[in-house]
Amino acid sequence: MPKAAAKDQVQDNTTALAAADAELNAADAAIAEASKYAEAAQATGEHGGEEAPLVRTELTPEERAAVSRQIAKRQRQMGTAELERLYPSAIVVNVDLKVNDPNIASSAARFLGLTDRTLYLINRFGSRFMTDSEVETTRASIRELIEQYALEARQSLEQGQLLVEKTRGNRDDWLTPSYTSSTLEAGFAVKARDTMTLVRALRQWDEAILQFASLEFNDGASLGQIDTMRVRERTLFMQVNRQCIRAVKAFNRRRAEAAQKRINKAKAEEQQVTATEPAEATA
Image (cartoon, rainbow, N blue to C red):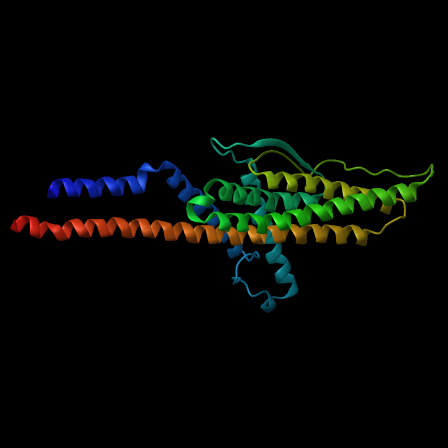
């Protein structure tokens, strides 16, 4: 092959690898961005990595509480922005997300958007960087935790409804509390089927707390029971969040490895052409 033609071929290959594949470029950008989000959560001390930047045992209880509040505030800001974000050309189900209880609303704001984005990336780009079995294993690891979250939401609601029915009986003095306003209201474009499971479960946790609040008003439950339910909900959703962060970071490592392989291949081709130049000149 003439030298000029060989150089043109290398340039064409490099251009195709770097820019022509718009889908690959989109995958690189989306995964890198998601990874930055995950790193930001970890950098503020959130669970999700093998190493935490803050050694909480070295902090006083007051300092740990202050750090936790800062983490939650930052996650709510980032998570709320993700809930409002629109993805071009994505297939979505539009839902009206409404959560009344402040604790449940905080979980939704902090974790729901990241979970949906993680599932979306796996579904759309997973096969580009992982084998089919790896994609399914990753998806299943998140789905298992989502299903546990949804199961306990359903059980809590059913328990609350049963206790209200049993305690109320034929009482004429039964008090029926309600929320004065909702804490979170947002239009949310859901991009993954498993995210819909979370949306339904959030509503069930929200309603379950109202059922137990009704019992508390009528001396059938304690505030401690309600607080325990809120803590359990948060714990379960944080487990989902931790798994999503692990998945995103693993996904990003695969993306970086694939990018490095493309770079190495382009360099090898260029070196091969360069090595042929003296021989052609001698000829």
